[in-house]
Image 1: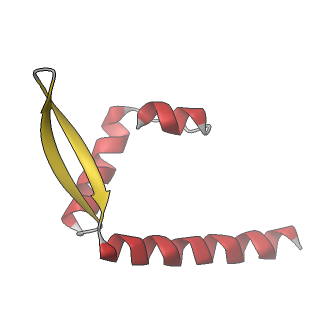
Image 2: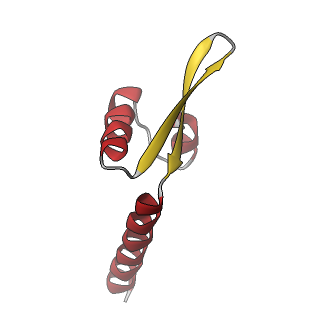
Length: 71
């Protein structure tokens, strides 16, 4: 995930990203599944229906802000 964010111009550390993911999980925006992969526990996150609603609303607000500042 960190590499994908870096590819889009966001340079975050795990110490920044994981607290955000934990908060989103606590707020039931994400569900975490732990899987054993090559002897290591990997965390996989899936968006919940509530998370999808919040994301949709955030996209609408971001688009509205973009329209206001680009006019």
